[in-house]
Length: 266
Length: 305
Image 1 (tube, helix red, strand yellow):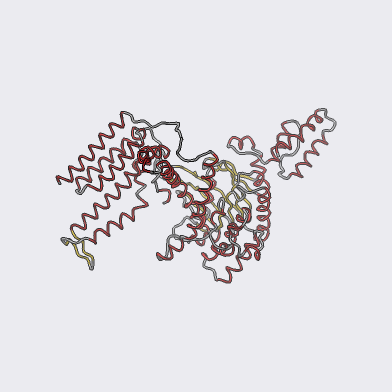
Image 2 (cartoon, chains in turn blue, yellow):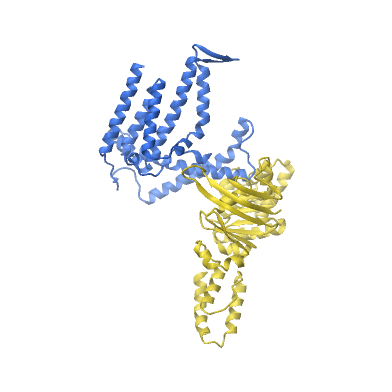
């Protein structure tokens, strides 16, 4: 199951999406996320899903690989779905014992589930098609106007890349530790919630130790190569906007326009 | 308790674009009490293979029969399987988590649901078996120990479950030469006392040659060779083709043979090899080219060792 988590992974492919400027992709992702929180009709969600499908098709990242990222959060989606379904007042649809499902509740639940799914898929598209290094560059350049107000844009971007970079490493580490403890007869799959939480200790302690060790090694390696923050730092590959970026901006603007239209008309 | 592996195949991410066939139709048998070495290039599937032996990984196809019982069957209790087959992972010291050494070693036996008294006994026994002083280390934090000691504590954690088969995946990786020798001395002592079947995954041909009575060579998920160390290491060229070395002793002997000194190449012991070389040289004292070979022999030895 740990192999299923695709957030933060990069999927190597030759595609127009991969070649886009990272700044463009970051802005598109933010616009998309705002978009899916603005829409409020099934037609709107269909449109947002269609847009994402087109982006996935163009990126040539296999759909099955992207969908695998949903597996680990399946229960979160299910949980929010049921929570929303029973928590709303309004026209009663069905009544089962103490639970009432209302018309509004049902729709909110469906919307929320779709939103979560699109949110995960949309944001994983960003990391799947952008190398972590490019992603940092993009974040840093986007934040650099804020430097004047004392925002440490380079440091923030560096922290984010490192965090992203180590998601797969830590997952791998978790997998290894889990297997090692299972070999010692540990059971992570049965028992009550408290029992299970307690059973996590043999995983969490080694994992934290590993994380600190990795962090220490990383800091040392960076220092050994004279890293001292963003001041005066140059880049081998300068990022530049190209024609395809302008095209992508236009698409993003069109997307937002349709979403706003949907909100005002429907 | 023989282990029988039949047509074992494991495919990672089956049906996904990153599908990878890690094991391909592997079959072999491991006899009771034997010491089996598994060698292969990095990424050949050795670690995947041993993770099947105690049910950590489930095969895509094939059977693993431990003690007459198919452990891949659905109804089999994995706790029972893990009680029989102990698996020590690579860098096992990274699995330590308890406050004291004794508590950490007790983790395995506790999971088996043994009574308190028996757990204490097993913990003491296991710590002594891996060559540590129980009274000295039992109440120490495992994190205050040296690298070699940590690894022994981790191995003790598996040994305390008293498995009949002990599988070790690169048990000496990253250790200094002394700790390396200590681990093997410990394995010898343990085998003598417990007569357990031992399976060793290793990159170090010297260790395999010196300890194993059977060698399995894995290449790209397939069983490439199987036999006694003498049989397997007599096929030096094929091994080189799989990216594997020969034990250093075999290396010297076969190079000497190439250079005209006909010493027996079937030993892995340094002293025996030295005797064989001396015998071969003595037999040829009259031959003129021997003087030449004699000159180059010691250099070669040093260079290869």
